[in-house]
Length: 120
Image (cartoon, helix red, strand yellow):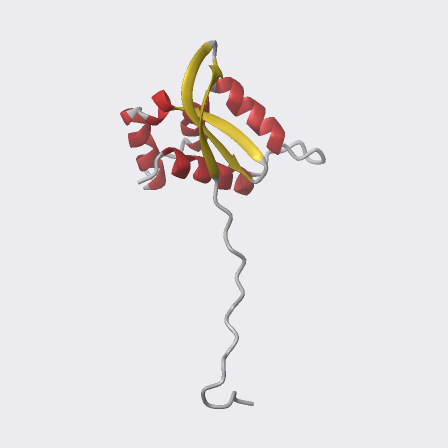
């Protein structure tokens, strides 16, 4: 049955997509006190130092990855976070039952970090 002419038609109630929350911070990182941003998404928080956000070659590698010319997603993410933080994050994501890091969730988190670290 069609709605009467002029009647309000319900719209699709899509869930609003969650985006990362960021905060500028200063912290001890790899033995030095530096500034950067904390990125929180899906209950996980990482620190991205400003010096890494200001790395042109990392920007190039990120762009190449997004364009499909670089498949080293893990390597690029590791460069944003550093080895220690990257490995700790994988452990946070690791599925206790399977022992695996869920690819889609990890990539979604990485995408939010890249977006937060490179706002434009």
